[in-house]
Image (tube, rainbow, N blue to C red; front, side, top):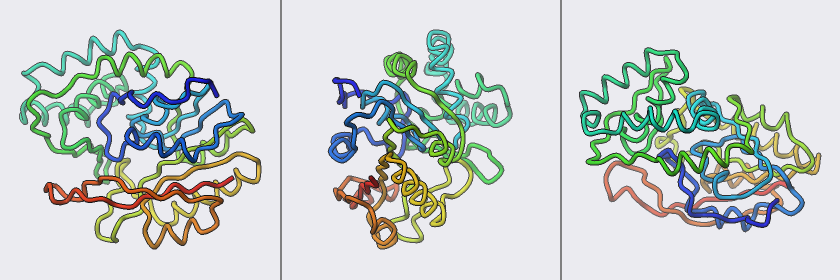
Length: 278
């Protein structure tokens, strides 16, 4: 790991529900980095952790194929992508009519470059940083009604530079665990176990992340531990995860501000856990 460990001021180019930028310091308190050259993230999401912790290499996995396609295009074609994407951030594109027209265009095309441009547009103009698909794979986040959606030009530029040390792969989290090396450390930010069983939002790839998936993740962490590779997992601290992580080597608890409804009163402090397997 390089000397420049902590750079917690870098934002993702994407708005991302549950992004970890604010808790990088908490993660670093527990993440075993000594002697480790590569950070592996089986759920890279918006990329805030990778952007703010400095390693020689990164292996970054996510189930969301649009997300990984976007990251690979920013990595390889940042200048062209920035010029083409910025065209969607003029005033003419910030209306519900245009948003739903472009969302329909996004769902109709299979061209990865076009989808990447529209994915960034939809992310920045859609509601509350959500990324959500219906069961048939159609992106269905409603219009966000922001006065001036931000175009993340500087964030794209920084991401592209950092991404030169990264490999982005679309796939299930087991894809990441199947490629681990002895000089790796793994950080997992899976879709969280619900605070209550009626408040679940885990369908950002069009399929749900079940209790069985949570258990499968712990199994992977245990296997990695047996190979000398530590794994840190973030989650809500609820009855289910309290039992699930009972054999973790260390558990760090902290509270975060979390929006659990559309109304301002729904923003409450909830308890999260960092469970370390090493």
